[in-house]
Amino acid sequence: MLQCLAVDDEPLALHLLEDYLSRVPDMQLVAKCGDAFEAGKILRSQPIDLMFLDIQMPGLTGLKFIESLSHKPMIILVTAYEQFALEGYTLDVVDYLLKPVELDRFMKACNKAWELHQLKSAGTPQKGPGYFFVNADYSLLKIQFDDICWIEGLRDYIKIHLKSTSRPVVVRMSVKGVEAELPAAGFIRVHKSYIVSINDITAIRKNAVFIKEQEIPVGDTYRDTLVRLTGRSMS
Image 1: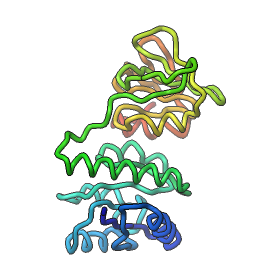
Image 2: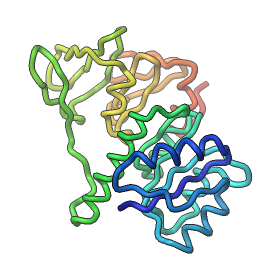
Image 3: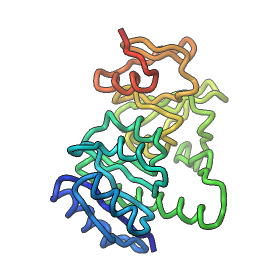
Image 4: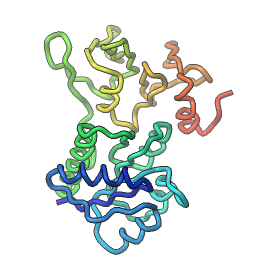
């Protein structure tokens, strides 16, 4: 049984987390609070396996709170601000949920936390599989994460551009759906229709990123993510 803590300054958000957690097997909400300072006291007073944490809170933000912890439980960020996703994942969080959180997405995050807990308990290296499967050409096709250069969204379909072949894999899937399958530390969304491999970026401009000669547009709402990635503003 995972012992869980919910931290959010919005009472309605805490109530929703409590309701959702009551439906998840093997997880128990043992405490909830409205700010990081109270959360710190709880972490010092009792064992917590998993913390659901808001980012924008008065006094001390969720990200600064994580940085202040010497011994961290597993953490799932729950926030209304998508622009903090990359920074959150650099702090080794389990998942990043955007409000309003749907139950199915919440369950997926909980499953990830449970699987990670099982790996830790078994002493297995904490590294997930380096691949995922997609439905393509009437079969399940195995896609290696490190083979992906970029992903392009086309209405109800995506094109997965690979290093190993010049022909992209076309899959009936949304950009949001494939984003949830990718390891956040290796990929970054730069546009509503594009996700790119961070390791394969060769250059960045204000309105575009490049993977060798391939130019990929950067959406206005995603520029701040690139600034955090590079540590420099795009002029």
